[in-house]
Length: 189
Ligand code: URA
Image (tube, rainbow, N blue to C red; front, side, top):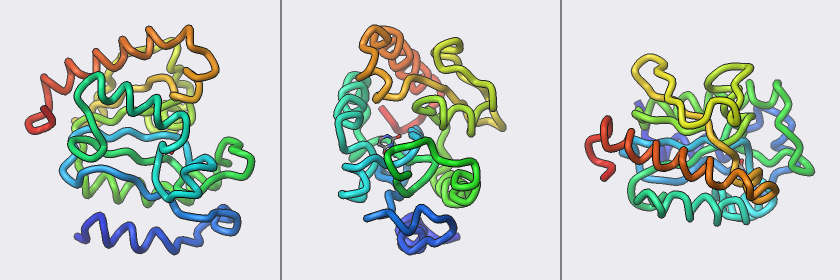
C-alpha cells in the first residue's frame, strides 16, 4: 500500500467531481502519518482553498485553540481532513454527489492512518460518517464504536464563532476527548 504523500500527489490532480473546476488548491489534509486521532471537517473555505491546507482561516484558529487546550497539535500528534477536498462555491454544503465522489480519498486516508478516534466537526461530517440523522447538539461527547474505531461528533468551529453560547459544550466534548485519548491511544500523549 502506498503512503500518504503518494496519495496526496494523486489527489492533487483529482477530477472526480465538478468542484475541480473552481478550486485553487486541493486541500488533502494535514498532520502526522502516525496520528491516532483524526478530525474531519466539511470542506475547504476560502482561506483553505487559497493555501491548500485545512482549517487555516478563522474557524481553524479556533480549532487550534481547542486542540492546544488538550495537548493536540496538527504538527505533532493528530491529523485533520475534510469530507470534500475542494471548496464548494460560496461555501455551500457539499452536494451528496460531491461527497460520494470524494469519499474514496478519505477512505484511503483512513486505511493509511488507521486512527483510533475520529472526531467529526459539524453536521456534514457527523451525518456522513456516523449516522444520517446524527445531531451534534443532541448527542454531545458520545463515542460510537464502529468496527473498533471510536467516532465522536462535535460542533463545527464556524458554528461556535456564530454562536459562542455553545463554546462550553464544545469544550466539554474536548475534555471528554482528552480522557478517551488517555484510555485508548498509545502514543498521542
Ligand atoms: N471548514 C471546514 O469544514 N474545513 C476546513 O478545512 C475549513 C473550514
